[in-house]
Length: 283
Image (cartoon, rainbow, N blue to C red; front, top):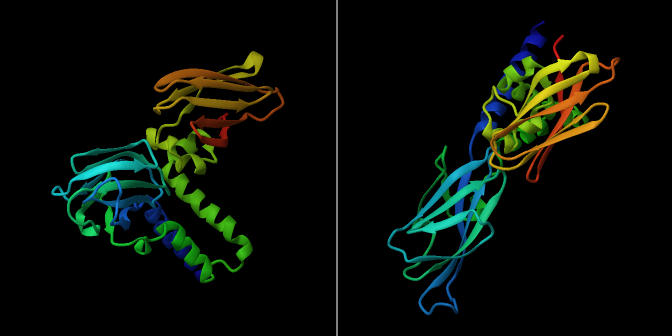
């Protein structure tokens, strides 16, 4: 009995820490390279500046403020979502685990990490690093790896299943109302960019009604994202619906009479594809 209580407390502590770390935002900026000679400018120097999103959430409206006394020109970037205005770099969006690199021309003065005043986003204040070696790992993944390494789970064979179970518990706690309605297998959805457009009580798909004489069931689809969305269902036939941003539609799913009232959906927005989303119709 005591052993079970200790195991329960340990699981609660570990899942609570993981939940906290998964919500933690990790936004960083570093200037790893300085080129002192630039053929395009007699007095200027070239500098590479990299912004990292090491967290598990999308960062929006990122602003990197540089020393206003510097004369800065944006020469190149590996993304179209960046704009230099005065001495501030504005980045529209940076996905989880991604980084963005820019090349700057500094016409006056030297440049190092002290010339980066701050980095902020819509929901967090980031950190300026002196060098790329200081960049930390994703804290949630590092914690899970550490727990597995010290032998919390006795066999390496179960490490993947343990991670998935902990992750499932956390997602269920965050999307409790959706699970109560019959939705399940929402882990990939929860950490997707699609989820950013919906609250924890909302979902792109919802049950509308059924036409029992035809074993046909209707679901509403609401695309709240800024990109086209395609929703596909599997029944007797594969049915799909494509919606423009901020539009609604209805998708019909037909089942055999003998089949359990269980449905599978997939959602595709841009390059992001989430499959095997389950819905069980409450009897």
